[in-house]
Length: 450
Image (cartoon, rainbow, N blue to C red; front, top):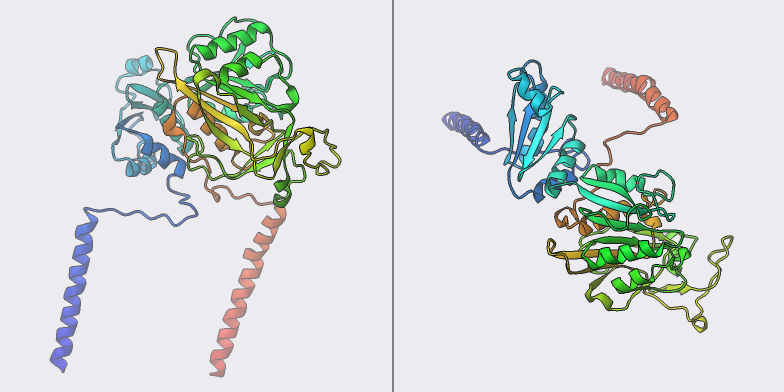
């Protein structure tokens, strides 16, 4: 019996050593990293991982960092998260003090400045953060900055404006990933300038001149990409030739939806959309979006376009012809005798066709019967911002970036008021020590009695 116990002890020791040796052996060949924070807070965000997945070749990063101090270790440690997800992302350090003349030629002025190179393009970074690195990778995927011309001079939404009706919030974000918004005034230019990747006609409020309409029609006929945001309250504004060229007709009335009451929406003119028709722009898109003051659209079939519905109202919607009392907006009823149309109705289309331009393969257009959903006032509603980014990426031909997620990690920032801070301070500094003293006293009292 005693010998058996000794054998069991030796066998256990041998198995323990063998297990430790196996762990040591495999740890030199395999690595595993686990992040248990909410949504991987200290790891790469889903957006960064999605951007890395879109790369189809190696990325070279050159960091001009001095070997003195901890800067190189900080840069290498930060980029290690990217390199774990993308092993072909190379990192090389260069001492900027070795060749000052070369540094001046390259324009390197900040210790630690990085240059990212991919497929013959490069991006420079002076800030070490996940947002800056991921945005730089997005710009590299695009290849070159995209020029987006916003028609101005007719009361349109401004791409850099901060007013509620403007689109500054969306365009500021898109600028970080390689989009450059420029104004386009047909009072100063008779045509859309060469090199324009996309023209945006964002809800004009006054009639466009005949020359401006003619220039837009010519731009479309020559193969240009277009985003046209229409609002029901603004009327035709002389844009019938453009609508005819696209084969899109605006239906009369304002699109209203009676199903919004179940979602807590008091105004039936505010449409909530959670389901989308099959479309490359909304493929895999699961966020709900909101659209105020919507015009329904219909296709006429002209222009040789392939039209795909993008946005559609519910079966409880209809085109309201009668004036709506803002004090009691829900006091409306469907009136078939007046010619109102029952839903579901489309209010957004994506159009595509073989481009007439010899330098392009496909021409793309998006027409939406609402412009408010991308304005500063409504951009933060549900998935409006994400949908807007998808629309721009599809129109620019950057299909690889369409489904890149944009939601951040929920616990990166802790927002706490002074009252909550005071309660937490009292709890940790007073109540918790008293509780521990009470528990200790209780344990001591029970031991004396035992």
